Figure 1 (cartoon, rainbow, N blue to C red):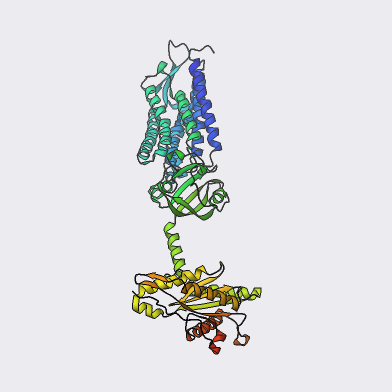
Figure 2 (cartoon, helix red, strand yellow):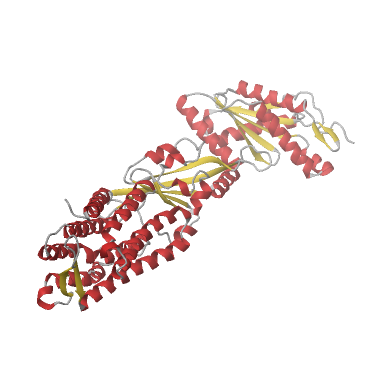
Length: 544
């Protein structure tokens, strides 16, 4: 082409190609943001407008110019109101956009298209169109009609409304999304400024610069969509509910790239920051998280999943409940997912505390009576199935009341803790020690005969007697009386064997040990024979 504006025509055509590419790219990404379909329409209509304008510039006659102007207006009138629709979807006002309202927004552009197509019959859009004199290439001017003013006012009004919405949202948005908002603002402001310059006849050769400027805006959009995760999964508008949530929320696209998160997520994931938008989740996930978290995050099942995870945060052990849920688009396909992270450290610690209160004795740290009885019954049932013996040891501290009376309950509590620690040190890994009540303790010995129980009891008795308790009043020698029982010696005529039966027989042995002089080990059978106890030593060996 030998036209003096060949370079300008080529640049405009490139802008059209970019808009086509932008529309194709957006079409394949339409699964995420519901406004992406609107963006595809904007790109397609922009391409029609731009290519029509390029052909208008290349025309050789007024008739050709009129034809291509009509083609331009197939796309151009609809772009501004659709941009307003896109902005409303972008800032979270999508619920205000019913099909009826969108159709109403497009009514004026539709009338504009009808007016320019039938202009020869009424001249409402332009009163006349003529070729400029003394131009090196055919270029047309028009004398404006009444509807052109309506069309222009509506176009600028739509663009100004979109700009106002974006500026308002920009003021309250986080830094992570300001770049995306600025790209949208540029997409509205640059063409609008070009249109104003054109209307005031401030452009070179009086040519419309908007199609060429759309090359710049298309490049901006392509860059933003490929680098900042623009228009992914959800609008970036996050209302106060999202930001005020105590639970951390991370929104992912269908490639597990981060597209949004709230402030609570930043607190729970120190590696998460505004620059993480567009990165994959594993790049910010808590290092050292308990095994199982990664499997949960990799689970792409439609029903999602949940798990409690333990990790170290700020030098403390934290517990978080993690729940993943898929995000669906309108056609039912998965567009991404959310990861909700709830800090349940307090609840977990309280639950653990309640479990300990229900399981362990608060003073000595051994099992309490209820839990010991449950464990004993379970061990007895397993022993019956496996046809193996089980034994019970019961013991209490000698002259314990005199310790409380003479030295106070603090010393008595210390004596109980002392006795429990020594007894626990003499047991096997599978044995169970519990505080039966007051100063009385019980031991369950799986796979143990009566003789085994006697040896364990005597080992505890000797260790206890040989380990005086340090008190403010001086060394305090603590001794105990022990009773033992086992399934190997329980009489069969006494009915079904229960843990209560074994405890009762061990208790008979304990009283036999007390009657025999304390600091001794006896069985139920010994209670009838009144065998002498081993050498007795008083509980308090030294008083200061």
